[in-house]
Image (tube, rainbow, N blue to C red; front, top):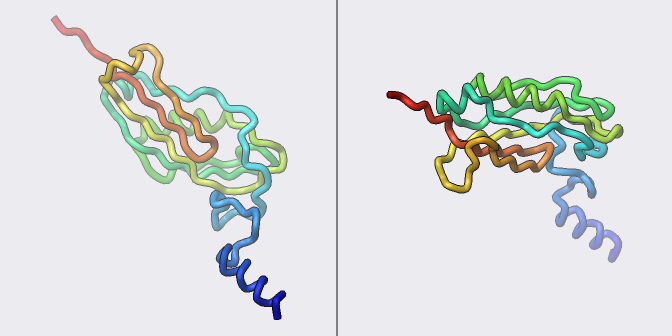
Length: 143
C-alpha cells in the first residue's frame, strides 16, 4: 500500500512526465540527448536592418541530428532579421548526442540608450533557446 501511495505521489508531482526530460523537448523530438551548444559564432544585428530601423522577434524551428543542425526553418519574424538568425544557427554545433527539434527565439532590439555602443551590439545568449541582440540604430547624417 505504501509503495502504491509513493508511486502515486511521484506521478502526481511530475505530472506523468519522465524524470529528467527537458521542457525544450518538443513534440517532434525523438531523443533529447545533450542539447548544450558546444560552439556558436556571436550573432550580429544586420547593418541594413539597423539603418532601416527594423526590429522584432524571429522564431526558428531547429532540427538537430547527432549534434549538427540538420534543418532550420523560420516560423515567424521579419525576413531581413530571419536571414541573419538562420546564418547564425548554421554555425551552431551541439554535443554529439543531441537529437531533437527545438524552437529558438532571436530578439532584435534597437536602443538609443547610452549603454549601447554604436559600433558593437549587446548580445545575450541563452543557447539554444534564446538570443537577444540590442544595437544602436544607424544614424544617417544629412546636410
